[in-house]
Image (cartoon, rainbow, N blue to C red; front, side, top):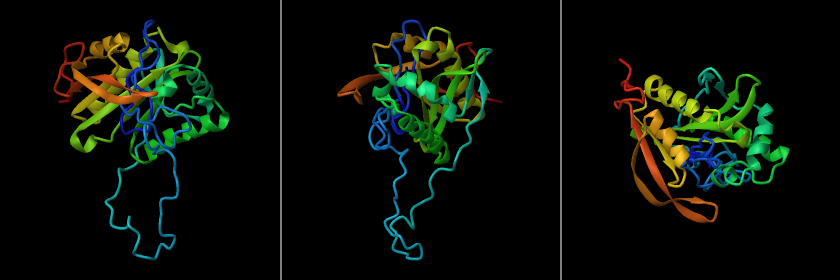
Length: 263
């Protein structure tokens, strides 16, 4: 998996679907969300919606947020085909079985806001967090669904915290029942192409633990280039771990040798 994006409340790291994939790449955002029930986020969880208004009187002009600049615009998560066998779509409450399976994985809850101890309430909160991320413009969270039986098998997200600087991060994870079917490669290729061509994002990046060679191979196959090692970049469980950073510019060539930038 690819590490969850740093500013996304611990959502998925990049996950690989290769047979050798141990589970999940991490989103660089492994800093847990404070609002995450148990999950992948790192640090305060933006998905939680506490009452942030210190001044209950809306007519008072003493609200410290009154002069704050507007936040990012909401985004609409589209549905997209990821090859002939998989579909990317917004999260639904019918995806609770996927959250249950992911919570049983030894790695996914460490790098995302997936609850480590499953309950329907915690799973529903996780799905609502995905909706909130889109509503607040934090990014595009997708469920990865197998076409033949409509079974969700993983997650991939495009996270926009650093979009003002011209870059975005991608994180993904796959449950055991979805691995070894080429789904990670198909999902990463689809989101990458869409982000570079349709959204016009200048740079995309992935953060992958050095031991996760399966995920690294998929990143390179899709066109990402390893750019270096970030030592102690993010907390995974109880320790800080190194992350290899992989980048792709919309002026680079893709895996098939064509330029990514649209005419």
